[in-house]
Length: 312
Ligand SMILES: O=C(O)COc1ccc(-c2c[nH]c(CNC(=O)Nc3ncc(Sc4ccccn4)s3)n2)cc1
Image (cartoon, rainbow, N blue to C red):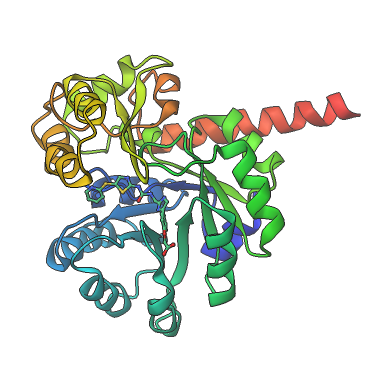
């Protein structure tokens, strides 16, 4: 099962691991890339020297393509663009902002640029600016969410652009990959599923919380324009109280700051921000990244061949 995405990025399987802040370190990205997917380092708000160390970790482990996700609310965006161009990072994904102004430099450095978008308008704007592909992220995803679910969003973006579209949001197994291909996507990006990869370096408590999550535990907190999907815990109840009394964005932001780190590094599952998507309830086991990818590919191929017989 190969798609245009495999040819565009030089990867074996059309599976991208999301560049989650604090979660997607070099260890995880290297394991996913070595297994034939595209591993991505999550730069988050980290300074360039930290990201450079993660890039070198990946390069020590594999020659396969990998990427860096640049979070456009980071104070280090300019330095990170310099870094990925200097390091000739094969792929850059971007989140929470518009990478348009950096495209000329990234393209000149031979970097493939794949922005994450949650709307058709932004998808069209970015295609016109010359990006190589797009991740269409439905609101089932973990972390900051848009307003449109994956099944309606992906085909609308597929219809609106001529570049490859990668489906994200609520996908964690071969059924999700088969569904994404049926929607016209050229591959999938998964975040929550890879939190429970053996090589992911988050605190075991965080992984445990994902394994235990049920269908209704990945709840939306925050306020209009700033919604974030996380696993229900004492922190989400504090956000609910703030929302109930009409707190300002600043108050919400103060409550949320440092909480993702608390969950990832200290394993604080009570008051940390356990960012995860609605697919958490589908993640039942911690496995090596290679096993996760192999299992998803086998399941998707079986479904697609069965669909063939059904249709025939
Ligand atoms: O219109 C424009 O100019 C650009 O507007 C945009 C608005 C939204 C997006 C967008 C949607 N989805 C994404 C990618 N998803 C995400 O970025 N998801 C995130 N989850 C949790 C985050 S919290 C965080 C991050 C770093 C450090 C610490 N905490 S970021 N980006 C992209 C562009």
